[in-house]
Image 1: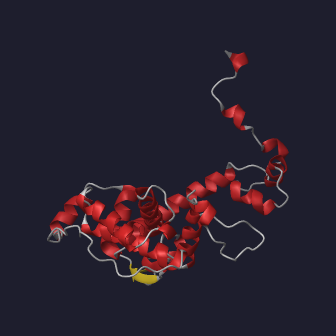
Image 2: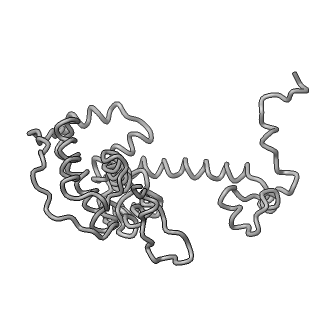
Image 3: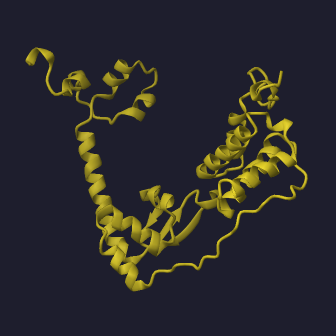
Length: 259
């Protein structure tokens, strides 16, 4: 009987008193220890699963270079994937064998390579960018301006916090960017004032939320939390007394007895 992935997994030795983790969990653990981005993590896990499924769920330790060759060739010949996709799949599999299984592969030869199409880079002119920006308003305009004027990636812009903005120096600090690195970039002058107005609006919303909050101690008791700090994760704080807490059921449209 062929051993399953769970049966063949060796313990990591990190927690001797606990059972060995599944292969998927080990993969994620090794990726996070090396500070890979979440998107890379998702992509690697995806391709490792595809590789295992391609070989009828045999454990990777039972497979070798020829099996990797067959999987990569199938991606190019049958699925017609792009060269970058095939390379990502190869990187994921190499990571699996080298770091997770500690069973590095020898040179993989004879792989049918996906064709890399020749593409010319498309760069918008200043006028074209201006016309695109003219169709954006509010938060979408702010985000687009940060991407274009500050060189931020989309997730970097969405993760910005007030503490990352230096209006006096005209700088933006990007935390945990590509490669889990921090960097400082330019804050476009055109976005400084609108960004400050945006922060003022957000602060006003936050203050209103606090004014509509419930007594923290009452909520703590209702939720059964031993530490009030746990409760603070879930609710805003305002001392209005126990009678200030309203059941979520009271917010429903109409009770049965009112129909």
